[in-house]
Image (spheres, rainbow, N blue to C red):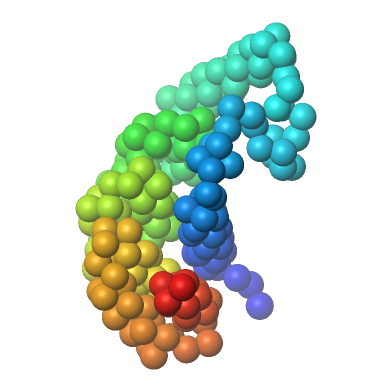
Length: 199
């Protein structure tokens, strides 16, 4: 059985949101602000060995990063209608901590195909991590206008409502997901979110 790319994007995005929620909760649990934010790079697989880097190595990395960005932008300028290249560049910008620019490029894809749920999910995510909950809600509503039964968008709406302080609305949304979409990842995440709210 062949899996549609859209499902892969949706599953990946759901896992990404779950990871963000997990780390958001962990950051809130940190008693000392120094535990949550430090000047050192994290000691994980992505950042391994970066914590003690000298300025020279970081400078070389920065130059390589700038070159990669320039190369990707030049390639995109040659193929401005290639939505795959637009998406790759938008993801690169997000990784480069340029979320506003990333959204600008993702919106270009939406202007070509307003029903790209995977792109709207990415836009929702970016706005949510920026704490621009109104824009995140707007992007999620755009998804629900295309597919009101999209489990990820429904779950995200609960996350957005909780982030906005609308805890009762979030509970209502997550309880609805559990009833409407039993035995799904969204239902599992909804149960976990509801349990977390009780603590």
